[in-house]
Length: 101
Image (cartoon, rainbow, N blue to C red; front, top):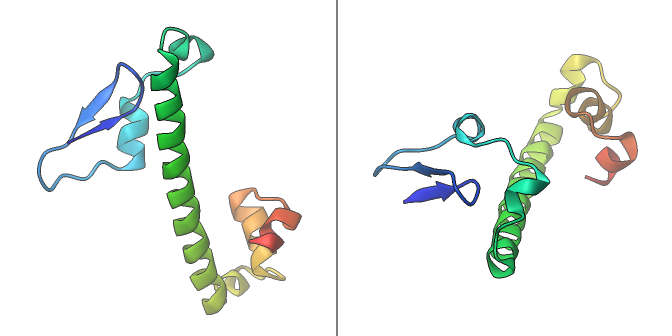
């Protein structure tokens, strides 16, 4: 199994191995608009939709974790008014967006 990072960079995974986001970040090449110029459109489309799926899965995990953090009142230990204020401070999310989450 491999994790595709760009059209040209791949990280091999052995059985039972786990690649962290940091490993993937460190292993990938620097991406720019030029990185995708020579990709056939169907390949570019497939990479966009695959990445969208990963982003959605990550966002779901983030929201589940925030809900549990809020349920525990973890933000109160930092003397914050609310979980939204904590998200604004620690995660750089605007207060309006944090309230929606």
